[in-house]
Length: 262
Image (cartoon, rainbow, N blue to C red; front, side, top):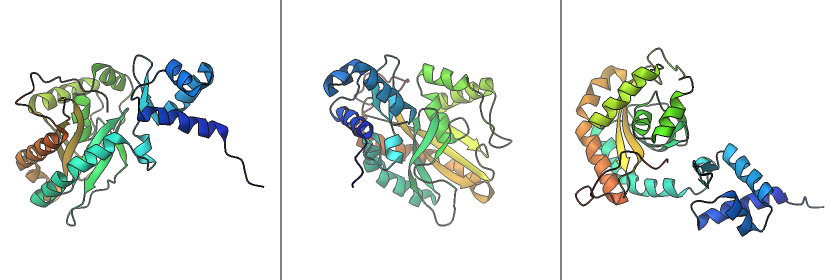
């Protein structure tokens, strides 16, 4: 006798299907569209958020999260960023002869979406891997341009020390993020992994919001001194990705520093 499907799982996927046409949904509207009780719909939303499949804003509305990408599903942000960043990242890696990455902020984590390998320099990262925001160069970029409520929430928790060089004092980290905003570049040296250093810069979408960061990683010896020479190629590659995403700084009236959460 075949095992019957779980009605709860089916209802959860039916709920997720609503987001294909509505990027934001509250519990009341979702319940109405499903024809289900508000209490059970809200419980599903809360459960999916706890699983990382959904995210919520301060108005109690929900949207799809990047956990779907990690599970092999089809996250729209990941698809667009992959399509528009793949070639520039490959060109950058070929030019600098070092591994390159593209990453986004997913909640309180850094999430690597793309990686271009280099056969001479191996770094222990992979697509779908999570990393601390405060200890990585792309993470610092994304924290620097995150909404204030996100930054305050992040700093309200103890900062994990991953190596002796990790910045774990909130005051020092805030000063570091000020420097990132002023220079548009972030650096880290053995803050996440001993023996590695990296440099990163921001990537903006068509509205000027920072949605990702790209980085170059090098072994401390013998390549870390080269990172200081990579600001121009890194910025050129970021600008190309931004152009592909529709960002036009010449025609934009103003640039909003606080991004929509990734």
